[in-house]
Image (cartoon, helix red, strand yellow):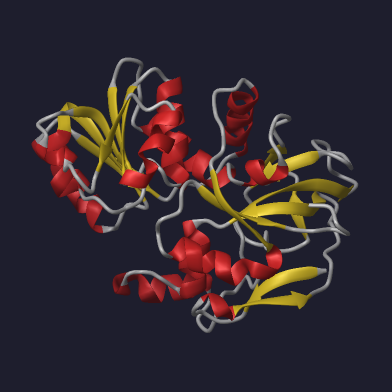
Length: 326
């Protein structure tokens, strides 16, 4: 089968299209024919080994010292189950699924355990659209729930046009919040179309200097800071950081000790129950995927170069052909 193999860290050019052995499912696994995958920020960081110096040794130990231990990257996917192991109960051959394997999605096929983060694909979504949901959707859902989002609250989302932000805007509206989205000039219309009550162009206005306060301030792209945003929180407000840096652990403790405000964030581990909840919202018309660009598997280096620039709207999706079908 075709797969994108990454044997060393570096520029997008280290991603090489190769022929590798097609996997065979174990008794508790399903074999998925992949039709689409998405490129997450985690995929880009792993490929380029883009991590703070402080965590260099720890991340090398986790991912691999000379190159990624898991040679095939790709964390989100959609496809069709081609075969199932004899112990599998939840799925059957022919099921259309979407999920988060964490790695291995840049390929024509993958084997995943039945108990993995996998669910039936939303019926009203294409494979490409569904591939854009698992990572960003799970992250936004988990963090908003951790922030105990409530109907009637004022929520500000910084980076509202990104992969996590586009989902967070829609989820916050679903929960009944008044949503303010912060993005660049070219993305104002998109964020409004997702349901934001107000939009702020960060190239023209600094929301931290407006005097407006919010019950929840979410940094969905990791480009703001607690020190800048804490004055924009209500007395019992919550600052939410996607990909929270280690320094925030101490800052968060100090914030909770010196005020009624709090900080949440950190690594979000996807869960199957979250995927099922997101599927239900999608099928009810409450949530949609935002896709910026689509690339064939063979052009994945170009796709990584585009994502690395940091200006994508929503998600970038990789399509995988199987005898002319995608």
